[in-house]
Image (cartoon, rainbow, N blue to C red):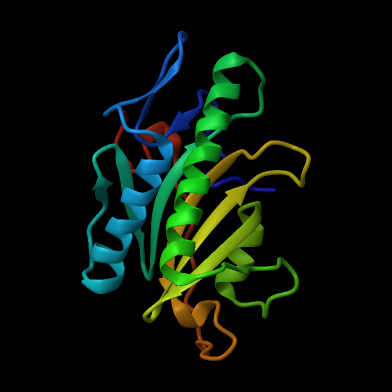
Length: 200
């Protein structure tokens, strides 16, 4: 199984948070649920409604935005496979952030649809999800885009190893309006570079 970038290991990372030997804390004092709502607000405004080709950078302060062709990636968390108190705190905050994003998407778009590995019509995007070790992918349609909340990791009950939001063309997941040809898909990102490409 490949993680978002299989060459990266090391310390945990969580968007918008400072992680040190003492604790895990928000950079700006807001809770993970609130941050999740802000992330979805910005995805809708900048990547769905505006139809802009946003360059790599930040979606909101402390939250990276990556462009990979037709895919936009918002890295959320990276949790290396070790267990100590700090990593447990990162895991809990990452879970809160995931719930915040899921709640905001459900409020706007209703219940999520699931991408079932091996069950969905196989295309370049679904195969890339499988290749990158995505164990869960829930999505919502928003205009002609799909907002996809992904969790990487070994099958349950193993803890998640990473999470992100992908924004892709709706036809990549829709069975009613499928895209016939999907170009090769690059879903890699690296927590060692805050998801961007330059060193931290």
